[in-house]
Amino acid sequence: MLDIEETSEVQKNQDMIFNLITNGEHEQVLFCYDKPTGLKAIIAVHSTVLGPSLGGTRIWNYQNDQEALVDVLRLSRGMTYKAAISGLNLGGGKAVIIGDATKIKSPEFWKRYGQFVESLGGRYITAEDVNTTVGDIEIVASQTKHVSGLPLEKGGSGDPSPFTAYGVYLGMKATAKYRWGNDSLGGKKVSVQGVGKVGTGLIEYLLEEGATVYATDLFEDRVSSLSKRLNIIPVGSEEIYDVDVDIYAPCALGATINDNTISRLKCEAVVGAANNQLEVEDKHISLLKDRDILYAPDFLVNAGGVINCYTELEGYNKEKALKNTEKIYDATLEIFSKSNTEGISTLKAAMEIAENRIASNRK
Image (tube, rainbow, N blue to C red; front, side, top):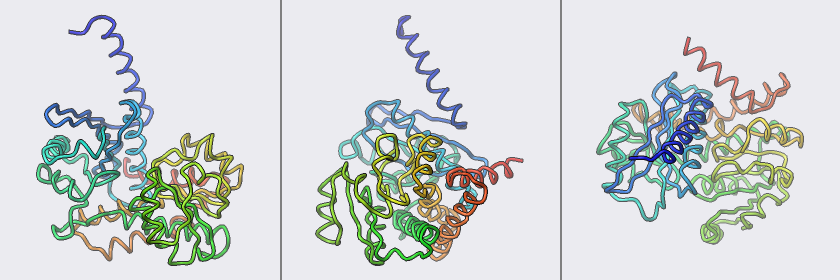
């Protein structure tokens, strides 16, 4: 039984949780715990207005539970905008699992997680994300049909990261077209923060087109290994903000555009795969605008992965997924044009398009 002080602390935590949920207008948040497997997860359903919420499951060693909650709420909200602006009949959802991915994963762990996903009755469809694999999702699928990103040989769409990388690449070409009048990235200097599957895929496109690429990652061995295979210029994880480039491409975790980094950026555009790149949206998009740094909204250019997963739900067709991903190029140009014509930020321009579609469907 809780004593008075503990009860008071619980009440404060509940108030904090509901404030976060209502501020973001989330429909549902499920806290999951399983003692035998050590599973500790949060599934956030932001919106199901356009369809069931879809978003990957991320494993991260968060500093505390509040950090995990804030992350999953921001990520799920971003998925709503991503699906809406891409014309998909999906809502936004996301899941985070708290812990060290190298230690906590097991078949029973994933089966138990699948049971929690199943308990939502299809309101949330999961897929892979940071520190989760197609193989992990395959185990989850043994307990629920509400998954995407299954192996190709099982009728799924496979790893979505190549489509995410392709979409970011196209968004970057559209940005170059708008900024410099030509969409060629040959001769351009690009700094890529994060060389996971998406970051590496993007780098390969850039090098093939003749760009100079500076790359970093929190895990230095990743950069070292990549530099043996590809012609990149390795830089430190802090040095990346100070490199003189044309485009900065954040492709790791979010909030790297903040009070500490904006003044250090030496670029003309920001185009990357990371979700929630702006730590405080209104403030930091304004600061980028003040510095004349063109920002390609993350939830627009990184939508290739969810576009691919959505295609799986309809009966997977790779050509269709690629064709729909290629629409990111024109959509990016449309956002820039709307921003310029209406005198609003590129972020606001993108959000308005997404919100108008959601509002229309709600009516």
